[in-house]
Image (tube, rainbow, N blue to C red; front, side, top):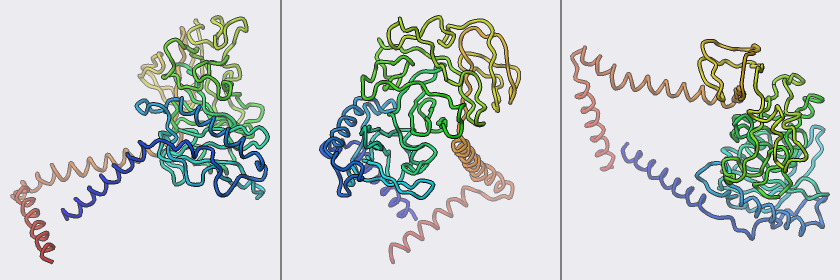
Length: 395
């Protein structure tokens, strides 16, 4: 038994060492944008050289950004897969096959926890043969997209922008736009990802803040206060506005509340780019006096949320109004998958605790009550195990 345990531990350590070695490897730049054996879709034929150049430019720009996790440094795509730039085929709801270009990367610093057969999947895709607009997929947006089927993700369609950031109500929020809508991801974590569908919401679709100029300066905020770089990595001399905005209620199509981000920031054209008008009521801290808001399907009791304290009562599925001076109460909800994961983890922890309580406390107390020395029983069991090991050695 001990030998089996030792072998298992040794194998685990070997796999960990190997995976760490792979994580440390840099991408072979000569493979970026190289066309694979499958070639490119017919719509891209004759444009291979330009496509390769676009891929290389996107890659070189992407590695100037930081990884999402603070200790990972600059973003590392990882190892290019052996397919290189290849055809990625999808099927539409009517059964028609369509194709885009894709290059996969593995074992980099993308935070994707589960996508296809890759570890930390990242990709560079191109779905438009006319503009050859290439898009980097990484982190939470890539994980959400992959779990919906990737090229077969009909809820989103193909991505049209890279991920970009701004601060809303003191919270960093990541956006990425797709053909059929956009993702809004608070704190850049996949369990806070919400997709807003143009198809499902129709006229009630909340327009996302504009993305910065494609492949431009990563630190310069645009008029909506958005940057390509994550807010925590911005230089000290760059301070985009903290935008106060109402988060749309995405659970009921057409049932959004407030301004739904339709007017995320009022910008005075006479001010420098990226500056929010200080007289605008959408700028954080600019509005004061009495404010009211809606908290739906959320329970808040005796806790502080985004600099506003709600105490002494429980609020659930009702409208709350009161006097507020500056600041905004923000309550974030995790998606169903994250909630189920937390419940399962709690069950495992409680089960383990109950077992430990029985094995180390209650069992010995029962043995003592029955006049049996539990430690003697344990020693006898260990002696029996040693005897079995010796027998196995002889064989």
